[in-house]
Image (cartoon, rainbow, N blue to C red):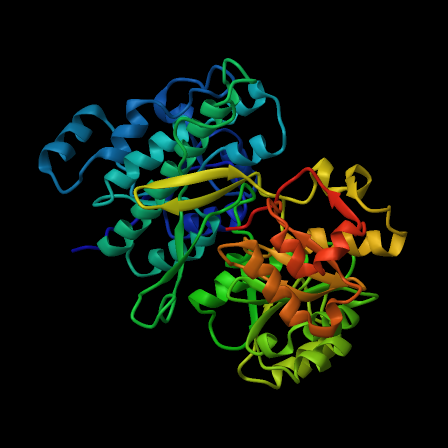
Length: 504
């Protein structure tokens, strides 16, 4: 028989969400409850009979609660394989009753670190007894079910009603438990490795010797970058416990997201949120075919779409504010794969939902990520995140290298172009006017070709526009594409930012 009735449970949780309801359900089903410290106090306060763990062990909690469950009467009850007669005989000889259920979640170590707490406080949030119990019960899943998430409490109550968890269910719960303790250990190890560098000025300071993360499968996609490739979406919980970013976006309307949709949506969101002003970015193959700021989002979209309306067909649109009805009416006339924003007005949602092909994603504004990960064959590259907050990103720090100082309106366009250029794949050239891109050259192996593409796409709008590039011009040929050869000699204004924003 694969089901094992639950007659005895051990509960020790930091997160007490749903605890009273769980304890009441267990008691109603005749389950004996053993618990620890504040967990036992909460259960007793709810009027549910509970045995304190010190009554079980005959030993009081000590060392500020550091030692309470590390005892044979606890761990033997979790590790006994009740299918073995020898184990049952030993339990009887020792006077130990086995557990059929462990409910435990761990101290909030990652959240404590993320809060900026001092090292001594972080150390106190390193759980010892919790992971030991969880691993013990998970190893012994043939006899014990282990539950680490309050979201699973309903499953516990359902299992009680049908005679306990099946072996397959206990194995699945064990897999969740081991994944949880593995992620916990990685977080602790990474913090120690990065937080206690002997020389904080050293080249390797802040880079842990071991970097790892636990990724959970969130979805299986229809296919990958191409139809013959299989693909799945994995998420990594943030310190808050919930995934963040595009992977955690809520699909309000439309078909399921594809691999390429996710890639482009991430690039679009990255571009739109470089600006405090209302901004819309239209992305195709991870590059902006239009990006603009405006008086409102509808104005910004109209300007962004005008940059390259041919390429905008079938693109991904990101807005850095809630989508309004005015913006929705403009978008609905252009075939669009995905619209991503922090929210959608009710009327805007109605307008856009009339199209079955567009996907509408609601996603919170991005948090500042400290590092970026990029897998390579046989390895992983980590780098600090590139953001437009370096001193050289402020026009006040730019150096005028040629020509005369420009007026405030032109300087504003240069500042816009510089920020927008960060979202263009290298080699990048972006022409802008009036707070909007008018021509973009991207992803070329030399800046001459990028400059040529930008001017070609801008057409007549190139006249009077400003240009930004992600690096430098070692030769005059790039300038000669952007402006007539004589213009440089005549003193076309040229600013150096002193910072580079390659995007590969």
